[in-house]
Image (cartoon, rainbow, N blue to C red):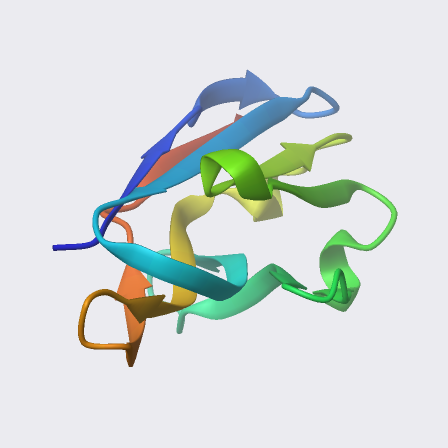
Amino acid sequence: QVQLVESGGGLVQAGGSLRLSCAASGSILSINAMGWYRQAPGKQRELVARSTRSDYTNYADSVKGRFTISRDNAKNTVYLQMNSLKPEDTAVYYCNAILVEGPSGRYREVWGQGTLVTVSS
């Protein structure tokens, strides 16, 4: 069974930085895309950043220029470097992957358990 395990969340002051990591494990034939979503209290889950297998990346307008997504394909891991954090970045951050699971060859969308990022003012 495929799993995504996130790490790196925590409490940081406004203007600070955090780096999130997400590692995919299990029977994986290929990963088409990995990304990060977030959900703040009382709000819907939203895309933060996403990276495809062809190295296409896209970001939410609110994080452009501050967050950077990167991948280590050999380790099936995606990172989110978050700089110049703001209180409005406070949310639970979820890792997401679109992948091909073995041995069935079926496409699956998988979510991590979430990691809390709290930015104090």
